[in-house]
Every structure is written in structure tokens, then in C-alpha cells.
Amino acid sequence: MKKKTTKEKLLMILKKNKAITIDGLMDFFTISEPAIRKHLHELEKQKLIKRKAHKQEIGRPYYTYELTDKGHGIFPNQYEQLPVELLEDLEELHGPETVKQLLFKRMEREETKLLAELDGKDFDEKVNTLVEVQNQAGYMLEVERTPEGDYFLINYNCPIANIARHYRQVCKNEKIMYNHIFEHSQVKPEALITGGAHVCRWLIKNPAVDSGQHS
Image (cartoon, rainbow, N blue to C red):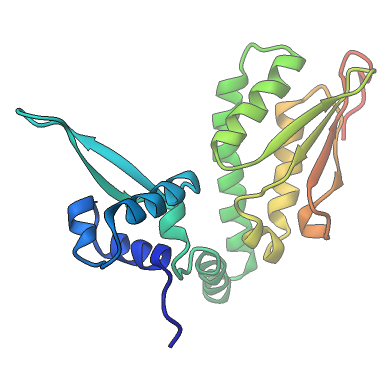
């Protein structure tokens, strides 16, 4: 069996212990405390662990270390595959139409939330607020404005890409949602991650220039 590195051993200890002090960690190692602190600092920089301060009535605060969500994510899990398997089970039990309705319901919920955030904003404000809200939800959106006032919406990360690859209805729903949000604009996908591209790229036409056109 391959011997674990110090960092791997630290991550394993933190996985087994919700929070642990430096003294608690030293019980597992024979190397020096400064060496352990150096590895902890590197893991913090990688955002795999976090340090929390605890105040005391007397004396300086003490610190504990624990895994971040990213740190937990390095251990084997079924986060990627399980949602797809559940949808496949639902399709087997109740048919493809039920899955279609479920995914559409998800789109409606996301659309309702976005419409509330974008209410009362002009076209440019809508685009920029959409980017901000979606990035908070796990997307990785950037926006490019053309000289004509159109926008390219570029998404480098789809948090549900694993589902979208199996159920293309997700991408169709996204097009429906964008067209509802930008009801006076023409919105169309120019590239999709599910189609083999490395990004999703959407064109949102400026309604002041493209008035009267709808997709």
C-alpha cells in the first residue's frame, strides 16, 4: 500500500475529526510542529481546510482546524452520479414525461427567483445582476458587451452539467427561462457544454436595437 504524504494524512485526520487543535494533530505525527504548521498553511491556501479561532476567558484564543466543503469533496462521493441515477429511477418508475415535468418545475423555481432579483432593472442592469446571482449559485459567468449593445453571456462552469448531459431538457429549459427574463430580446445559445464546447455561450440581443424580434 502506498504510504500517505503528510498532507494526505492531515486531510484524513480532519475527515475523521470535525475540528482539532494543533496539539491534537501532533499526537498523530513524529515530525516537528513547525513542519505540520507549514503543511496546514499550504492546505489553507488551497482552501481545503480552514482555521477557526476560539476565545477564552483567560489568555489568548486557541485555534482548531477543519475541512472546508472543497476539502470534503476530495474524498470519494456520489454527488456527481447520484442525481442522474435518481432521475433514471424516476423515469423507469413513472416514465420520461415525469422527469420532464420535474426538470421544468426546477426551471420555474429558478426563474421566479431571478425575476424577483431583476424586477425594475433596465436591460444592462438585468444582465449584470443575472451574472452576479448565478455566480453565487455555483455558475462561473462572465459577460461581454458588443459595440451594438448586445451581450455574450459566457458560462465556464455548469453546476448541474452531469444532469444536463443525460437530460438535454435542462438546456432547453434554460433557453426558455432566459427568453422569459429578457422578454423583449432575442436570446440564443451559440455554444453549449453539453454539445462538446468548453463553455456555454449565449447571445442576448439589445432590445433597443433588436426590437420586435423574439425567439
